[in-house]
Length: 57
Image (cartoon, rainbow, N blue to C red):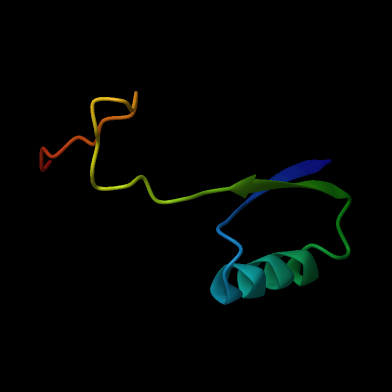
C-alpha cells in the first residue's frame, strides 16, 4: 500500500494538485495525507521563537 503526502496551502492551485493526485492513484490502494503548509513571515520580533535565516545558499 502506498502512502502519498499532499502538501497544501488550500489555494486553488493546491486544490487542483490534490484532485490530480487523487485521480492519478484512483485505481491504487493508498493512503493520502494532507500537510498544511504556510509561508514563514519575513519578520521576527523579540516575542517569537521562529527566526528566518537570511543566508543565501
